[in-house]
Every structure is written in structure tokens, then in C-alpha cells.
Image 1 (spheres, protein in one colour):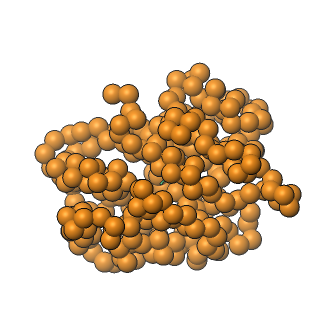
Image 2 (cartoon, rainbow, N blue to C red):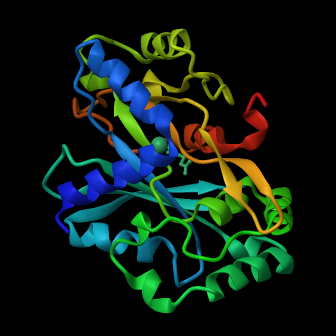
Amino acid sequence: MNSTIFFEELWKQYIAKTPSAQKVKSLFENEGNTVFNDHIAIRTFNDPRVNIDVLAKPFIEMGYEPKGEYHFEAKKLYAKHFEHKDNSDAPKIFISELLLEEFSIELIDIVQNILNQVDHQIFKQKDLILKGRVWQTPSFETYQKLLSASEYAAWMYVNGFCSNHFTVDVNKLNTFDNLESVNEFLKKNGFEMNTSGGEIKGSATQFLEQSSILADTVEVRFEEDVKKITTCYYEFSYRYKKEDNTIFTGFVANSADKIFESTDMQLQEN
Ligand code: OOG
Ligand code: NI
């Protein structure tokens, strides 16, 4: 699959679970903008069957290379970002993994059991991140156990492999000069911002400002019952030039830490 088709397919799957993203993109387009994607993000577990290296492989084959590394001590996550070697317009890829060994035996067992349900070949497929949840129907009891230890683990159990967000490159919008005006526009149109750590995460001195709307929710069929659970969200980024006059292409761990919370059910109004 060529990379253009791959990203188109990824977008289709993403908006199927995140209709707000398509709505926001259309609103920008109606104002006279072309929307460019700054980056996508993928979540996983650090189990060797599905860790960052496994999920990065198809991107490496497309011409991406590893760049920055990020540590999230409280959330027990590690992440890497990847950039395309020769196409600076290609979206950056941010992949994080849950550090299983830092959790209880119970959580480790649950995750092992989930992964054991899946044929090994599936994890090796290049289009794994187009496959969503590749394990059996989740149990709400298990979901809640995971949730008490890690919102990320619980989200991953229900949503599986996908792009958990796309990101509007605010630098490239024609009718907006900054992230504040984008946020005002989103709120005026009825979208709810992730306010954890403030509406805007980061600053010009960190060369990156980010904001995001709260994740959409869908009704998920669990073994026991149907429940509303968060899916994916849309992010907005504004990047500044560094001292050397080139634009900053990395991520800021303190800001990312708060962006992760866009899928937190507790931030939802209902
Ligand atoms: C990723 C959160 C971090 C960013 O741009 O800093 C991030 C996630 O929610 O999986 O996307
Ligand atoms: Ni992001």
C-alpha cells in the first residue's frame, strides 16, 4: 500500500470513530483553508509483540526515521517520534507505549491475556494500525480494572490499534494566525476543549503550542452491556522557529502529558 493511500485509509477509519474531526476540518475548509496534518499518534503496550518498534516498522519502510524520545513518569509511558527522511510535508508519527513492568501483576496478566487471544501473524501485518481492536469483545469488568490503574490501558483495551488523533497544522491555515483564534472558533462552533494544563499547552519559548478537543464517544458493546466510551480526538498545533531559524519539529513532554488526557472519560460532561 503506498503511503498516500495508507494515510487516506487511516483518516477514513479515524473519522468513522471521530465524526467531530471531519466536522472541524469542513468548518476550516468552508472558511477558505486547506487543512494539513502535522502528525498522527498511536498507542500501544511495550510487550515485544506490539511495542513501538513493531508499530514503527511500516513507517520505517515508508522512509521514516526515529527522532525524539519522551518519558512520562506518572503515566508510565515512553514515546518516540518519527519524521520522514526526505519529505518534510509528510506527517510526523508519535508512538507511545505503556510500560507494563511498572504495573501490578494483575494488570500485566490482563494485558498478556488480551494479546494471547490474537494470532501472532496479525501483529506482524503492515496495516496493523488499520485494524482497531484485534482481540475479542471486551469485558466491562476488565475495562474498569484497567481504568483504575491507567486510563491509557483501558482506552487501548477498547479501541485497539488506530490513529488516536490527527493534528491540524495551524501554521498552514490561511484564515487563522494563532492557536488562540483557532480555539475561539472551535468553542464558538460548540466543540469542547481539553483544558487539562490550560487550553493551550506549551509556549513560543518551547517552540510548540498545542490544543485539542475532547475525544468523541461511541456506544461500545461489552460482554456485559453497552456503554459509552471515548474514541479519538482532534489536535491543533502551532510551531515556532528555533534559534537556527528552522521550524521546531519535535514534541514537548509536559504538553503531551496533558494532551493524552483528551480521551479521559472523566473530562466528558456526561
Ligand atoms: C498522544 C498524546 C501526545 C502530542 O502531540 O504531544 C501528543 C496520545 O494521546 O496518544 O499527541
Ligand atoms: Ni499529538
